[in-house]
Image (tube, rainbow, N blue to C red; front, side, top):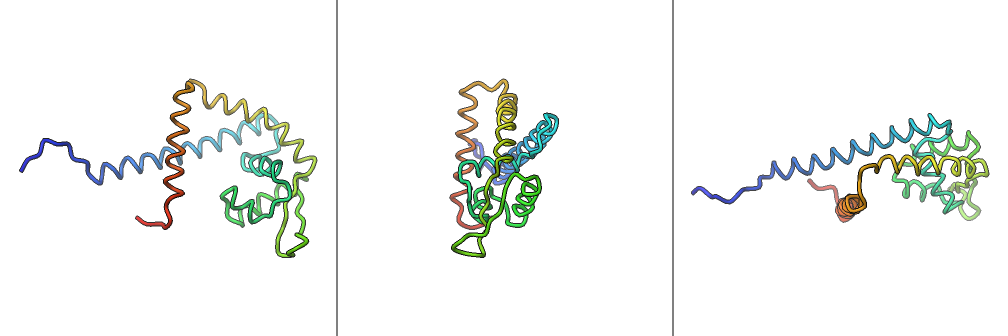
Length: 161
């Protein structure tokens, strides 16, 4: 029997989900490239990821490296490389925890704070440029929708298809 009701197919739902994931992924990649390029053009010695780590340490100095990996959503190996590069630049210091010699605590140095403070206004200007042409209602909608996507992801307990 022929139905006049529009049908939603699994392919259409999948295409919309895939498009959403693709758009978020591409936006994240473009954002990272844009920020890194602009930080470098402004003479900053930080990458976007290094800025993020220093920003977290400025609020939670002396955090355990494992906790920092969780907060930054990085695997331990890539975070170790990131911290090593900041350490080599003199922006962070690692110390062994007093209570557990297996734990490494990460501290921001004065140089790290200085570099973070120099990069902060640049990041603020970049954010303003990225949001150019987006009014406050549109921005609120974007943030609300991204919040929904994040909550959907967080609510998933297992990787099911």
